Image (cartoon, rainbow over all chains, first blue to last red; front, top):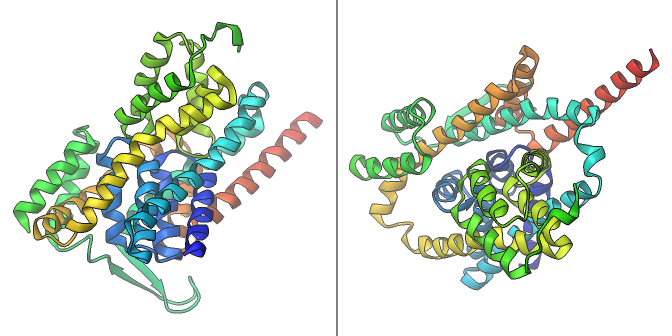
Length: 202
Length: 189
């Protein structure tokens, strides 16, 4: 159990360190580490956590880390108390790099903010982060597995069945996209509507 | 930045104000900026001129923007202890609310009503991840080259299965070297 807690802390420390571009960028990192690399949670469990993190107050990244920390440790140990410890560990580890880096930035504030080097690196990082967020969405829709070496053998592509149940899922997804992107509706309202429609349709 | 303009606050006050900000931020960090402005400048803790700088820095630094703003503003108001109090305050509402939900939800996961609600919610959540991505893309991908970089990082993570951490590390190393060499060349001219 101590090994799991340490693994969890190290994972969330890395996630905190490499989150550039806000909460949604963090989701792709959390997903990759927690679902893909460690297999601590399933895709559908993670999707539920994202939904709840979006609906509840507080920054998405913190909500998600707290939730994942609780779920991973309470699933492994079967105890609420250990789960609470897990969520505290994950959240603390997530914040630690921010604290360290922000202290450095406060110290070197004026020299840092307008440097050509910093702007140069950020100009590359921003589009990269856009791609990473896109990947998070794609991974929740389909699974790609390679029989052998990636890119040299043919991949096997399958839908994530828990998230895409039938054609109604695609309709809901398209409607939610339209409502939020063009209709500029509040995400909380869109998620709420999705829940009501789910109750009616399934 | 001049330190003398800043009014002092007790650590409990800092904790309380940032807890309020944390509790009312729903969704992303941008939603909290007007709230921060109202709470901090009305108390004379941070001036309105300082806020854009604090936001810009908190955005570009790694980590969660809301947390970065708390660390930075807390530090400006009460130094190291102030930044810890502010951060703890900003995170506390999330922590308590999510824990309560996580503990209750684990008991309801298999309830048929909850199951069908989440069948409807999951595709919606996926669409809602795509929306901020497109909004960011419109702002930060102005050249074909930026779009190519975005597409490449998407393919590498979603289809090849490379960890985002390695992608970010590679981009940081390459862009740092590229900008550095370009700067040296221009300086040498």
